[in-house]
Length: 401
Image 1 (cartoon, rainbow, N blue to C red):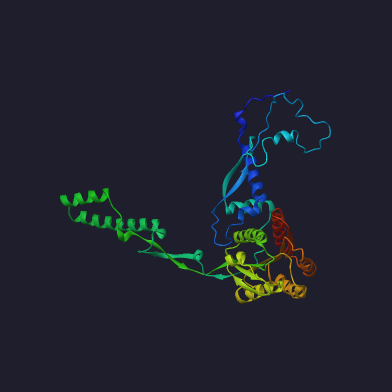
Image 2: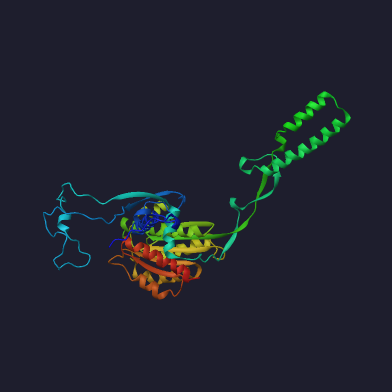
């Protein structure tokens, strides 16, 4: 029996609350399901956190009664052979989907919503429930954010206009003028003097001499610094599909670390049998022929750290991506370089994307040979594995604290 309850305004019931909750769940699910597609074309560095990203959202279907036309009795009933999850009347639902011809059935509602890059990262990080990262190192940096006010001056730019000080200067001038006017009144009581006194009391405007601006000075201050080294095998075996996933992988890791530190620098290292520092465009679009020596990329990362980032002052993150293809003669050297990176980095990870059929067992060599809490090795076979792998890597940062 249906029960109808009278609406009580005193309960402050928000009828749209449930719709907003379900919409938020749809947005979060769509982000996680389409993570690789959303960020695959985004530039890793140089993006504003306020940049808008479009996300497709499936419409919310409400439960409703559907009345049949009685031409096919029992079309909504099973005969006992169905299993949980089977759709009754599947054949009827396919009506109009002929080969190459247009359909005549209603499609699924899909619409787009826009959110910022910062919102995407926040949605993803909510699922991780991570505390602050291990920010253990900092150094002296001279930056525009370290400006300090050291007094006032008569000239300056509008953003540094000192309102209160300007008003104080005007009041000081007004008090001096009042004192002078009072002395004049005592000496004479002429008609002109009385008129001037009346005008003085009615209006006392600002003058250019009253205007004051803040004087600022740059002062070095301690800031938290992070350096991210993105290392990838760019030999012929790393095709466009693998680089598509690699871009999404690096993008999320970079954005997450950028949110946690004041100053973040990133270096891209591409390698085949030799390695070099390249631009972001070259990193994702350059293809080299020849074999693969994983150790060349990791050794170059160590060189970049030694030349640019003192481990005593920088929080270091090295992320390596490959399809697992490596010459067996290089495995020992690769393991040695991996161990050295895990000694000096906050986090070192190895991601194997769509492993090659002819790949080596380098992933197992790393997992068995590097006994550090700040190291993790993951496999990404398809884009649905991307978020699971990212969660595993970022949780390693937590365990390494």
